[in-house]
Image (cartoon, rainbow, N blue to C red; front, top):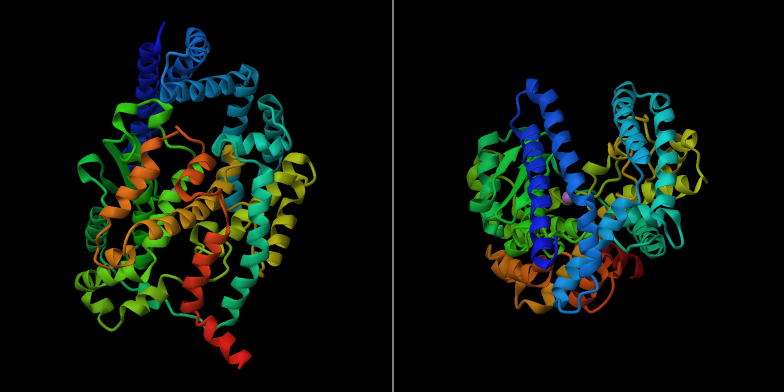
Length: 505
Ligand code: CO
């Protein structure tokens, strides 16, 4: 390997192997018969080994070090190389012993977590989680950090974002959102029974395909299938897929799964195919990915304007279920705010408390200020404090999510970052696209998608998340935009302003 062309083709090779793993994983979730599981695990593990060898190859590292000093490269090429070098160096900080120990512990912890959740017995998971936390602390030291060890873990999912920045954001969540959700809880509640009627599966699928198509999702470069946990996956910008979940007794399952995953897939379809395998052709961060799904799901998909266009079509598909409900009834039903135990079912406001709680816990766990054995108690106390609910069991509490059993610490904040970036981007899009609201009411998303493509998708990793945010919106990530959006929307939905006026009069 001698020059930039060699670098590009080596990265394409790494991407080919990585994307092949992704195809096998997609198949495993969507298509594979049960008996295929054992050999599939072997196939994926073999490819993962090849992927690692290619990524860590010594002469690849030497090439990166040489290219990073090469002044004949363009700015874009330099950026690609420096991103690759950072990743290469990060991978090389892990010792073989550590990687093996981690992978063994994760597979034990995952099994223990499954059993513990089923039997509602945290004690079964506790020793493995203890081991994992210990390994995670070691990982922080291996990777290195400037201020807080947890910075090293956040960096794995949201590069260059730190505890110092997240503390500011989550302090805002605490100071502003807790009270607002309380106001909503004290207001007269809305009704969502219309969602829970019998909705035949095939018609639901056909409807979401229409929605995806209107959003600009290219079915020649993707497809929608069913899986138990909805996800999106991409093998290139020309094959970027979504899965969704259907319940015949609850229409909301499929709607938010399809629109959310559709938003993720639009991001992947918007990366430039000529940058295949390069940092410039790779999504920026998990938070930025999530900003694209949340923007479509919440800012667009849960708006009245969106349903002014789609609701008549939905009524056409399900006339018996919906003929007696207006679009406003439907809009209210999809935006119920209600504190609950389970993060994945949470509304777009209380959702952030689930993230905040885990963020606080993870940070302290890594520092050693909370012991693993204290987790169920700490968890339940925080749910009481922030959401005012009593967690009925550890299965519905501290054991609900898979992330910790996978060793994914530092991951959760990206969910909230996604919503906050989405609100800030959408605010800017409203400023820059003339009559965006009317266009959404007409089912016309062409300009919005173009705006996202031009401002966000096309760059991949050419900027950091905060650089990109500043380029697009003129400032760094700012929680105010989310709060403005939330207030404008939910004060109307729950008639909060009217109540305030009554009081002041
Ligand atoms: Co998502």
